[in-house]
Image (cartoon, rainbow, N blue to C red; front, side, top):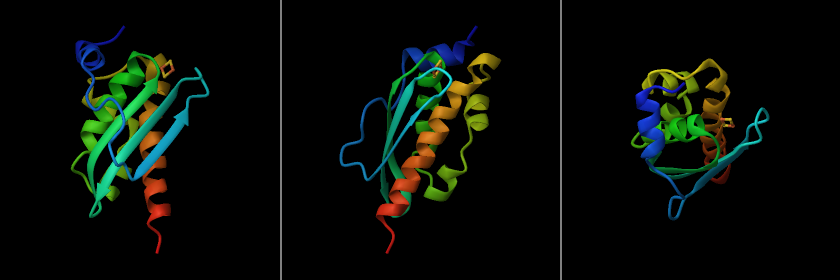
Length: 123
Ligand code: FES
């Protein structure tokens, strides 16, 4: 069902856990399956310095979160907020159609974390 790239990312996920001294957090649940995802970010000078995820989710949720967090590290807040689940799926070489909904978790959690950061930093 999954391609080798997805399985590799699931077996050796990057950025698992919680960023120490994070200053942005986003948590979302997937209504379809009930799985949960949390993303923490450390943002300094408008750059995502670190990103980590925790998930109670399936293979696709782990693989897409791993890839999505890797893709936003080093990016500006604006660049990171433009990352879509389609970009992540493409980077993973595709997902089975019935697993597309899982990839939305990472995109949404990153979006919420960025919102959280903006709220905390409103002057
Ligand atoms: Fe729930 Fe994939 S089945 S995130």
